[in-house]
Image (tube, rainbow, N blue to C red):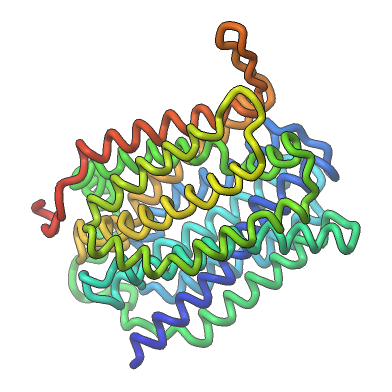
Amino acid sequence: MKSLSAFWALVVMAGFAELGYVTLNISAMPVYLREVVGLGESTITVVGSVFLLVEAIFRAPMGMLSDHIGRRRLIVLGPLLTVFTSLATLVASHPLHFIALRALDGLGAAMLWPAVYAAIGDSVPPHKRAWAMSFLNMTYMSGIALGPLAGGLANDLTGAKQASFYLTACLFTVATLIAWRFYPRDGRAPNSADGKSGEKLSLRAFLNALRIAPGHMLLAFVVFFGIGLIMLLVKLYAMDEFGVSETLFGVGLVAPALAIAALSLPLGRLADRLGRTRSIRLGLTLAAGVVWSVVAPSQPPLAWVLVAAALGAISFVLTFAAWMAELSEIDPERRGVMLGAAGTAQGVGSILGALLGGFLYEHVPLTLGDIAIPAHRTPFIGCALMLTLGSALSWLVLKRERATSIGG
């Protein structure tokens, strides 16, 4: 019963944290930095990329630390940091101030997510792991659905771009309190007597994780590089391409994202039945096809963009549940280390992709013969290319149902 209550505490806490991160990074920050502070898209993506960079650098160390001192301390402290940064953003003025605050956000995320995924992996047997991870996918999609709407409504109803930051501070406060009150101590303590703690906190442990699964790390980097190309620009693209308001952008995401959230559990069960490898390959192939379908030289129909967004979300849910289950089985004894190392590979890919995406969006239109492609569509072409490469790599890297541990 204790592990069951801990599982549900993690799921609810993750829901508030995901909603907070989506509202902050996708909705609040890009609009505030452009409309209030007056920064260009390239600078905005630099600021956002600092979050990704710091998260990437510290994910592996924080995953190791969670193996060593327990998940709870990091799960509580991570969102607490962003309560502070959300409010401090409103008194910041120089780009360096925003960079420093986003660095703290990245550190908080690095503390939180490897510990949460490892704790989920700790709490369920292997044959239910993709299903369990799908609960976190459900919270993620709920955040995608409600974050832009919540941030947009807060800003539009108050007439102030600062309102969404007060909202994120509240969301992370709730996440902190849930983790502190309902997630139990897991029995891990510093300076454990097993003689392995020093190794778990070493650079060697991280390098061993890379050595054990180099193909997985490469696949993570490629896919998240592609996602990073567009992740900080989606809302600005919608505003520039279709002229939508902040609230309308949020409303457009609600129905498809909530539908996908509802499908997360069945898709998680499907991933368990299909097998992790087949699910990852199928999901990446579908994702690549969806992005290619919206990168036509002319403006794509808005209705199809919404359908494509829903299909892309389905592919993400199917792939990510299977992917996290795959990573958690590589070395169950060092689950935090492996998830942290993969998180670092994903984060490095995201940061590099985001930096390049902002530059492409602002400065690099394409010309294909007589066809002119505006610059704000260029990052989406790059994303489609990277997802196609990731789909191909999945056939080389992943083996059919890797049931082995370290020696696989």
